Length: 178
Image 1: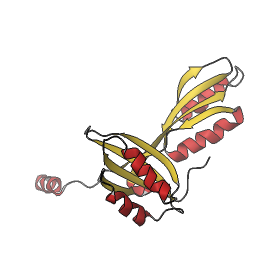
Image 2: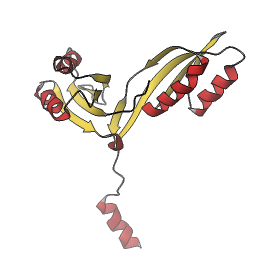
Image 3: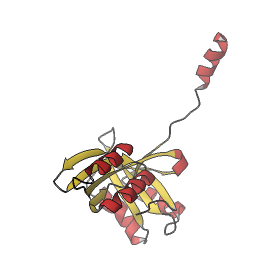
Image 4: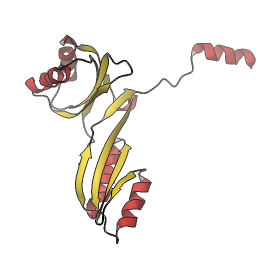
């Protein structure tokens, strides 16, 4: 499964109330927009939750989605994150065939991708790996020849990248000491 493509990443800060997820998802559904992934969790402030919605860019005009979302009462803020402006991660659990003959190869592959082995059976292993969507696509492709028994991905979560420039105040202090 290749997750690269034309996608919009929206982070939506909403009131942490019953039915908000259904209202937001319903908005996408009623307008025929394809949601590629959806992740929701409470924020550092228990009054709010953050939704990360990855929308198929070909099916959804982003300006229209943003306007419609902002009309919903429980929505506090909508932000679109370009891939270059976001830190994105996704979690994957995968159960893979791993007989004694191939177990060391699967373990080595897991090590390369910093995956954690969660469970080991006589003929299979369950791995957990977190990373960028592209990294998860890569390990999935490499595990496929061994035989993927089950696979579950969480969908993307994302936050804006932090500023890289020092504050002006810091530069002024630096110039005085030079």
